Image 1 (tube, rainbow, N blue to C red):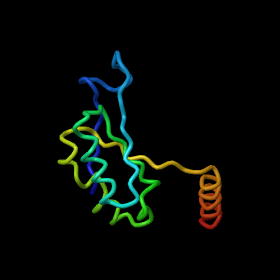
Image 2 (image 1 turned 90 degrees about the vertical axis):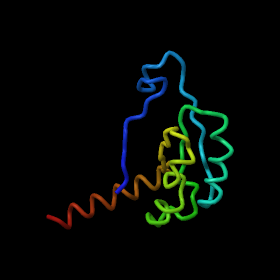
Image 3 (image 1 turned 120 degrees about the horizontal axis):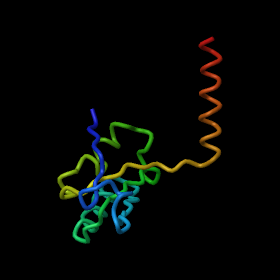
Amino acid sequence: MTRTQSIEVCGEPPAACAIPAMRTPLVGRSGRDALAQLAAVVPKQPDLIGWRVDSFGGIGDTKLVDRDGPCAERASARGMPILFTRRWRLTELRSAAGRTDAARQDDG
């Protein structure tokens, strides 16, 4: 099970900080690529690290995402929060909404 926690920057929620938080995205196509990006980013000390999982080649395999992605290597982030994000295309959202509506109709 994945553990979640609140994100703090400068000891406060990001919206309460006097200065904007700097988030650095990881966009590797493989776990190895994302981890190499993580290793390059950590010394720059961003406030947040964002893993854009939509660029990950194994996005459809949740076990692969959990096992090979940067979230599995939290120690490499040296305490920096990793924000897990996925961007959707409008067509994907419409398709997902259609499947949800169809499933509701089937349930009666």
